[in-house]
Image (cartoon, rainbow, N blue to C red):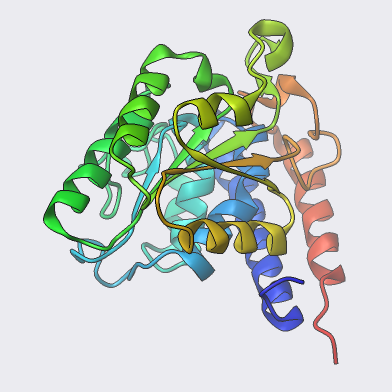
Amino acid sequence: MSTLSPERRFELERHANAVRRSIIESLLAAGSGHSAGSLDMADVFTALYFEVMRHDAARPDWPDRDRLLLSAGHICPVRYAAMAHAGYFPLEELRTLRKLGTRLQGHPERTRLPSLETTSGPLGEGLAQGVGMAYAAKLDGNDWRVYVVTSDAEHQAGLHWEAAMVAGKYGLDRLVCIVDRNFIQIDGDTEAVMPLEPFRAKYEAFNWRVWECDGNDMGDVVDTLRRANATPGKPHAIVARTIPGKGVSFMENDFLWHGKPPKKDEADLALAELQAAYEKIGVPA
């Protein structure tokens, strides 16, 4: 049984739907960017910003905040949208995505926007950065957590596994690596390009504790994050199975939307679908 009440679950699902609509609007305004992964991670980012993560939008540099790193920087539209809805900056600013001089760069840039912990771009680097932060926190006796959101395909990078080895050695149990397991990358299916399975066995071999969840089920996402946070001893890998393009029927499970934004007519269709889905999310009496 989920730890979320039905009322709270529906509230979070509405937040996630609003995040998805903002993703579509910002990608349309930008005329470039990544649709599929941004949409499929809306539930995870909503769970982090609105339920699980310790943070304060009014104090983005709060020393005791949890750290959130987006290693898969190309899906930054979902992080920006979640941050805006959580109060970090005005929603209107989302329409400046990828514009010249904007704070919302095509990959997160640490010095541009408060609470961005790292600048990301080259895939495979995020976990190494998160390991460094988690190890420093452990040495200093701090209790904040480090969440690193990764794509599945960036597990094809060797640096990622070097970082995993270090985290396992030092038992960094306040480190959580969330894997967007959507099976797509720019050239097609991950298992055709460079097979990644078995995830569980690989992480366990590096002395990690592995959790799996439906990354598009809000209750499952929140419960899995909470179980990981309550279990000490080892770093945590959460393999979140997601549907690329989640919420927009003509984008779902189509790898061609990995790095493509919607055109005006496509955005209109997507927003109409999401609005209809929003209206169907009800709160029980």
